Structures are given as structure tokens and as C-alpha cells.
Length: 312
Image (cartoon, rainbow, N blue to C red; front, top):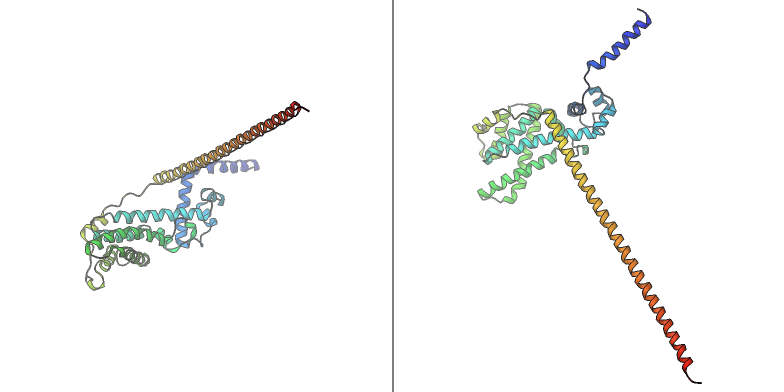
């Protein structure tokens, strides 16, 4: 093959390769980077993961990651926010049950289900409490869940004659017990989810002095847990949610800027009004001064006329 022929083949190869790979859209690339970062953060933690590694795994350059998230802190904040919202939604739905025992069972099952289905996300939440998360740490999430449990306990305490003011303390105890058990179960995974939830509820509901020998989850909670899970939001729905959040943030910024402009306009109007009043006051002083001077001249003239009229 001649030199010109080999060059032609190389040029043809170069021009064909890009056509075989579909270029990702901006939103697709963003979701890909989030998925890759989630796995790396779960495996190595925030400090053990680098922008270089995220970019290399995604087969992009570092500037692409910076363009979408501004840095490692940005993508970490998105990953943590998504995991916290997912877990909080599951717990909140569980606490919508009518009976307090069912609430407790479903909340324990919801946490264990999240751990089972989103192990990477749970590892990120419990491993790191990095300031870059922006939305707080696992401790802040537990505190938020405890505030919801507090309302449940307050009603239960009131109906049983206990002091409802103790509900916040008991809520922290209860949620902390479930959360720490979840951290332990993350690695051991034995016994099964329902059995762990049953023993958790056994201790929380009956106390050490009233433990059942063979606790089980109530049939209604078992059926609820066995029901097909709600479909997870699609990438399109997640993108639309983020767009809605960005739109809301932009609207809030517009309102803030408009308020600043109105405040500035009001300040300018006030300054102009003040200047106008000062000018009018100055003109009034000038008029008074002219009148005073004219009266003084008239008085002086009258005095001279009197002197002329007096006989010698």
C-alpha cells in the first residue's frame, strides 16, 4: 500500500469513529457523572475520591466535571441531597399509617428497605459528614425524622397519661436505635429485613421487661412491605425536578433583584426629595435676606429724608 493510501485509510477511520458514538446531551452527561460519583463516594468516601478519577471513569476531561458541578464538592452535594430526600420520603410515607404500632413497623421496614435497595447511598450518608454536602449529614437527617416521630409519640403519650413534653427525647432514642441497627445490618444482612424490623419493634414497643419470645411483623405491615414498590422516578422526571428547582431559584433571585432595584429607586427618590427641599429652603432664605436688605435700605433712606426736612 502506498503512503497516500495509508493516510486515506487513517483519515477514514478518524472520521468514522465519532459517528459510531452518540454524543450525550448535557443532562445525560450530568446523570452519568452523578451515577459514577455515587459509586466512587460509596466505595472510597469523599476524601478518597478525586475529580481525576470521576472524569477518567466517565471517559471525559476534568473541565467537563467542573462545567456541570463546579468541582467535587458540587457533585457530592447533589448525590447526598438525592439520597437524603429518597430516604426521608420513604420514612415520611411510612409514618402516614393510622396506628402507632403500624407506624413504627413501617418506618423500621422503610429504613431497612432503603439500605437493601440503596446500599451505596446509605454508605455515603453514614460514612461522611462532610461540609461539602450542603444539605447536612446523616445526623441532621435522623434529627429531621425524629421531629416527625416526636409528633406520633406526643399523641401516644397523651392518650396513655404520660407527659407529652418527653416526646422529643424519646423520639431521639427511638430513631437513633433504628438508625444504628441499620448501620450494623448494612454489612451483616442477617437476619432478614422483616425479622430485624420485628425485633426492633419488639424492643421499642414492649420494652425489655415485656419482650415477646418470637416477635413477628403484623400481617398488615407484611402485606404493605410485600406490595410492589412505587416506580422510581425516571431520569426525565429527575431532570424536570431539577429544572423546576433551578427555575424556582431563578424566580426567587429575580424577586430579590427587583426588590433591591425598588429599594434603590426609593432611596434615589428620597435623596432627590431631600435635595429639592434643601434648595427650596435655600431660596426661601435668599428671599428673606433680600427683603431684609430692602427694608434696611428703605429705613436708611427714610432716616436721611428726616434729617433733610429738619429746620436748622
